Image (cartoon, rainbow, N blue to C red; front, side):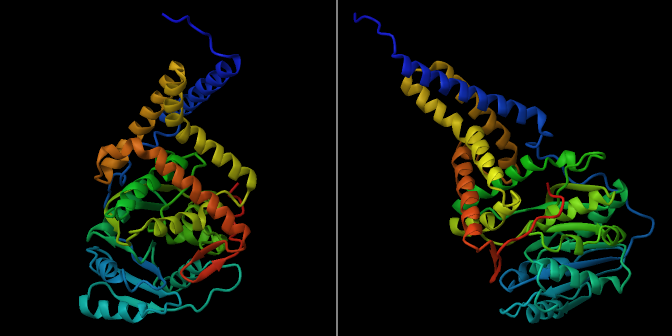
Length: 405
């Protein structure tokens, strides 16, 4: 038998650093598991419903730019809402070149249902994003009807027939100024299965839904595809003028409402679905990278911290397992495997919500690495002067909401 040879000091030190780094990742995951509002749970659905004695009037505002491809699957669902009170839909054609406005009128003629008004505000002035300029125009048209609630919904969102009724009952029953549902995004292609559930998982990690709906907390967020907003609150919070330059407008809206003293609720949807396809990685990449650096307030220090945090939390565990096995570091393997297990376990509820196979859970580090690269690409595009580009418009320096810090 050969004699045992102690490892050189340099190698011992590297193994020790690896083990301690893996232990740091595990500690981070244990904190996320218990101390981040139970973000990983997917049971935050509409609060208890309480139907009002008199159903309030609601106006639905739909900003739409070049949405002819998805309108046939979404607009009829809005027109077919089974709402006991008075409701009507305002579709704001935001400079479309594909016949969006004409198609909307044709769909209304063909399907009937709620009254539909189609109008266009023209090009947005400096300091406004196109979507919020369209929302402003739609709200201005709606206010002539004297609504008590506004439903702000995107042109790619399909609603179940009772969606509006349930939203109003939830807002009335819970006393909320905003009730927002994170629409179930389309998951059909290979890349959608890999990236989309993680997108919602990461969002919930940043903005734990339970904290948003709890009074006295500062956490505020909404999902722009489905936002029921009390009209009086919109005026008090100066929506959308107060957030006119926000690229991440849904989070900005929720923050403005909370600043004004309003209550916000956000949860996952059961019967509100996005019909927009993202079949290729390129499509998903553009969706994330166009606003990722704006989320970090275009701050290089925040970017560096985010990259380091993503690496520690998501990339260190598998690296520790592989490197620890190669170097013979049992502590590194044990800590890395435990962190990886907790990570995968917290991802399982989201995969179940999206009806995806659970074997995708251990692949979360790979998906996180894609998001890390998307974030870096967002910063690169910003410093090249391209900023947030979407549907033919480029916002060179999309400003954050004044108090997003």
